[in-house]
Image 1 (tube, rainbow, N blue to C red):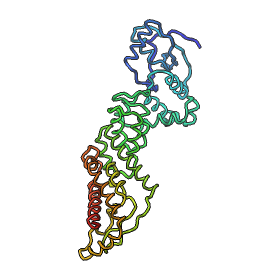
Image 2 (image 1 turned 180 degrees about the vertical axis):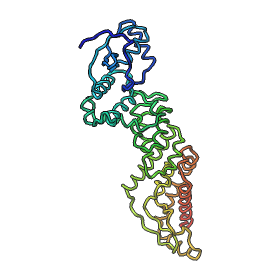
Image 3 (image 1 turned 90 degrees about the vertical axis):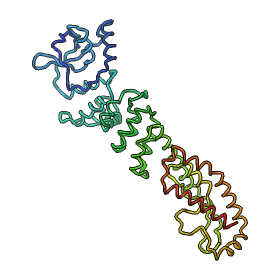
Image 4 (image 1 turned 45 degrees about the vertical axis):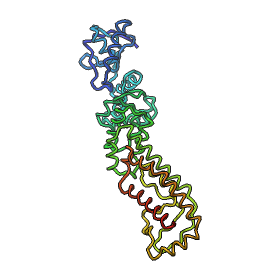
Length: 369
């Protein structure tokens, strides 16, 4: 492999090469290095039909040498004309160099697989470049994002303000565009760690949450979204626990016609995104289902009969008294939850359900008393 000094005036940059982003600070540092130590690695060029040379790799070194006013630069000269071979060599060389951005990589891989000049398969590229297929696929996923997001993507794993790493973006890649890009920009602005981005992505992938609600969630900050996720996750776990551990049935009341039946089952949490509401329904296990058509109040003519019957059920009265005490002890927490910032996740019909359950308990206590 011969290295020769070529006049810089005879060398042209390859406008089609995969690398086009050059950090000015890094370029200045390279210039200082060349001044002190000289150019340690030659650039590679190929001959062209007009007697000139075109760069295969070494654009940064070429730019730095040109800015320093040098007349010549050490070069390796290639006579190859195969476009595929040249482009693969450019990518392989840049993969070993500092500053080759994830987006530049993604665009290069996409070009090799979809450009009519190449039409390479994923398997072929992985073998040629010595990279796993998953590495190439994940890089190409970055191209889903808008230009506003792409320009923030940087190499490495360090979380920086108004910058994005690949790891931050991967959890968002399968979301619809109207959610994916705004969430990516929130992650950049609020410097969200990867673990938080994964939680937010899980929230937006939940099909039980309506699109209109998700649109409102996009108005929140990163920490606000994490708070919403926390409430959502607590409620999900509570529902799962209730399904896995059904509570034993208690004897049904034999009260007058029209009186609601007391069951031992736990009512569904009143709000999908309110932990306080979930806690209330957990501690008031015998609250009547809000969808039950039965009235909690006795007809006036049946009051005496109901009292006679209930007097034979002291254990039932004792249980209900205990439940009422628990309910009263939770009032402060309910009020606090409904007035907190996270209460925006509660919907009117869910709040009504909580109120109705409390009214049922009061009506039952009055009847038993």
